[in-house]
Amino acid sequence: EAPLADASLYLHLVLLPQILYHLEQRLVVDAFVRHSARISPRLGGYLKRVNEHSMLEALTAKSCAVDWDYDRLEWLGDAVLKVLHTDALVNAPALKEWTSCLHEGDLSVVRSAMGCNARLQELGRGCGIDTFILTRPLSRGEWTPTALVLKSDNDGSDLAKDVNAKYRPSSRVIADVVEAILGLIYLNFGFDAAQDVAVSLAITLPLPRTDQLVDYDFVCSQSPPSPRTARRVASFLGIDTVLHPSLLVEATTHASCLHHQTPSYQRLEWIGDSVLSLAVRKHCFNKYPDLNVGPLVVIESTIVSNETLAYLACRERMQDIVRHADSTLPSRIESFYCDLRRNDWGLWTTDPPKVLADVVEAMLGAVHCGFGFDVGQRSALHVVSPILDAIFAHSNTSELSSSSVTNTMMNPRQVLYEMVPSVKIRTLSEHEYALRFATSKSVWKCGRFADTSPNGDDVVCYISCCNATLLALSDHSTNAARNRCAGLLASVLGKPRNDDLVAALACIASNCRKSDDEELIL
Image (tube, rainbow, N blue to C red; front, top):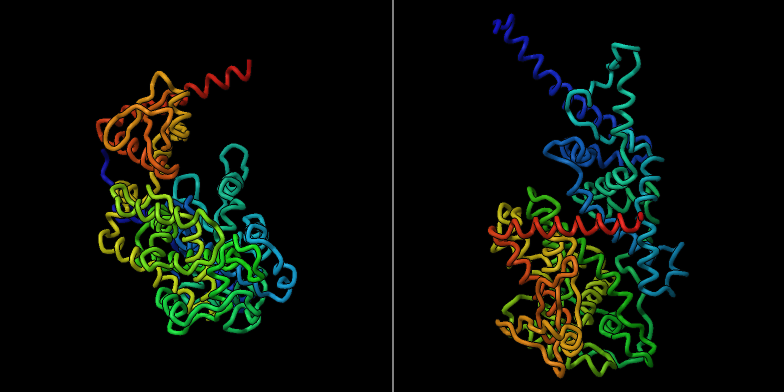
């Protein structure tokens, strides 16, 4: 090989594209801050005080293939947007009159429409945010400095046009960046600042300036809770002042109380769901700054699941204060207690009544409505602190980044679906299973295989792939049977020596789908 004419020149030529690439990213950030100040002085004023790397993170898409992108900020901003739209639907003067009569399900539909990707990307394009999103990676033929034009040797055409079209940000990416910017503002300046920015960009509606979100001075048709009960709830929620009696009665009134004028907890539960989600996301975001969104989602879903919230409610016997007319509820709560006592498979194999988790979220919604955003966030973290402490005490960032640790926190059915997406999980009553599968009645029960009985009263979950039953398990409840069966099969397939079996199942399922497609074509 011929010696290099100038080694330093060669080194500069190698490093120059990287220098120009990162320099251009910084210039884009600076241009975006100046653009934001023109379209929204409030947004521009906040962004001027944000450090450059955080701004770069909010504008960088995954396609850039660098060590940072907007994923984490978008995950946080999504929860911020959910609370903003919740507050707007409950208390914005322009919406309050007609949303006050909507059901929880209707409110969820309206909230989803307010924060859908189509609306956010339209707002992003209207504000010109899409022109500042960084999407092109530093690779040959994919990136050139903005001031240079890449020409073809043959016809002199502009080759950069094809590259720019390829990396033009999609509607989803634009919507994600809008949410990431909201998450960035909230993280650095708080919820009021995020609300100011959202209002200035027409993402949400302005609210009246008050600490109390909703006026709850109606007269309850039920007797107010005793002072002792009010103090118990305040202690559970971690607040110094007891809730307004009307708020407390509504937060603990089940929908089965049809003859009472007091509304059920469904509306407050809908509010509390968004409050809890934001509190948990911000806490996890700050606790694990180096963790990707995947493990963060697993942690959040574990903390806010029905099983976890029901467990927290039963720890403090919150079920004693629920006002209901459901004759089956006491027995279902007692069954849940039994599941907790035999807790050999964890919370995922319990079957708690949904009312327990709903009441916890309704109480958090009541705190948010009665005392404002900051108190509501502190209360939410106080309620779930036992679970947060348990997770953070036994896992660090490197452990949570591994699939083996996160899988133990995930719902077993989700773990199994990620291993073999084609499996089907079905349940039957024991006597139906015994009659339908007369030739193969054996199921896993109490640590061994046993035959099902036509007179049995358990629930049988059986998991199949390509019409072949992989495992059948019997338990006393549907949820426990599903999760235990999925967890047991996932633990078997997850062993290193069974990797070939997982691959074979996936291959068989793929071939079956191809055969089905061919039959449909014929």
